[in-house]
Length: 251
Image (tube, helix red, strand yellow):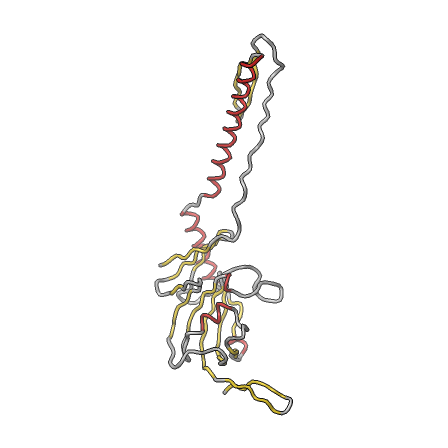
């Protein structure tokens, strides 16, 4: 099993420090008690008038500010720390959701905590430098498609929970499209470029190579998308012009 991490998409939140108010009584020559409270504990501090009193009050103020600073750092560290138990719990939740959605065999798991995602796959998957991950279920025969050629393929799209979001099998007809004109999702086109006719491949597309997000698509958030693709055939295309009419014919 291999785990692939995805970088966070949001910057870390800035640290906040609470102001500390110190109330020390009016200066007098005689010794006076000043009561200070920190974390519910009452303490007694002696102060005098003149330079010694001002120095003592400055030391007290600095000690309180330093204490508040250390408390803030400690709290911040606790928020950022991650427990292996939490990752295990998130992984089990993802597996349960995929089981309920009848995800296919050897489907990747996703450990998502906010905008940070870890992809858990078997060792059969391959990861490219672009971030694309794929698994060859069946290797086809023939030549790989090139720019300008038309590819005909079936596909099934899934989200991170293993729920099916689209399928050409259910539509009753395969998809046909020419490569090289940016009509496909970047990660999808990269994933089928080195496939051969008759091949079947599972493609895991990271958000940076994924489809656009918006109400006009079925993608509502920046998530990983998984596609099972079956490449049926590859055809050459050429432009045909008849009088004032021009089109592209693939055969």
